[in-house]
Length: 370
Image (tube, rainbow, N blue to C red):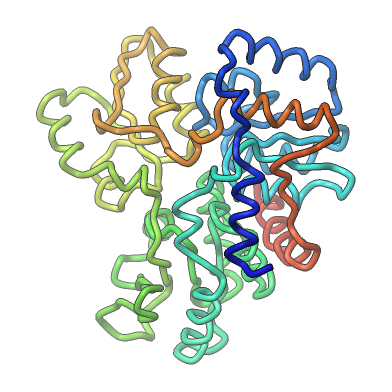
């Protein structure tokens, strides 16, 4: 079977059966609860903060990428891990859990546009070219928002994964290993983190994977950070105009953004930090305080609902939720659980042994610094 036929077959297999499209919300919620109660500790459902309310209400634990990676590694009891997140998160869970545990993603289309901006062929070509330019002076780091193949590449070359929660720790660690680092696949998190640690913009270059060229003006010997030309399609939609408009309209409102936003937006804001940082900041804020948040809309709406004593808005009033994360919905969740109950599991995520072993070298370095 050729690759196109294989992909078409997998797409067909992962399509939601029609009957789930005709069930009421009440029917689906009742059935999810029944199966969860029946499976008990045999089932573990981690849910990312960006998930819809209809899904996150059933999560056994909600968290950001780092928290969920830790929980996946620590959970030894569950036979089935239904990961309510996106593909790279489920891959990470499969690599960190034991072989006897089965990881399932409710909808195989729940990917990540950022992770898709770095494939293994591009990365290997980049590495070969940069090795020719800089020799053995580089170490790779990859944001966990990357494919298992990229994590394995980083592990193979002595690097580590990072999350927005521990990026500063990992960049500090990287600079103790080598003179330079290649940061995949989010240029904004890499730039913001390195800048916060004192690396000037003049010592950062961008690798353009489309042209296979280094974008930099200056002396190559001055480069300390090479940023992959990738980004989050959600966070890149927050702009300095959003900040300027809000400052003019409501100068007392504090602006809090995720470091996946551009450097210009982060510099113009009052605070920047990981998803956990944003949640903690809002939860601990004074009653009556006013906030504009630059991150995914499902999370912003949830923070608004859970903090009625505070005045919270989105930094960009026209933002939409993360579309790929939102492909996981109640019908897909129920389909997944019923497949587990029947013993005919759909949408299992399984990473091969070699990729797992190399990726875990990178993941364990990150978890050791969590």
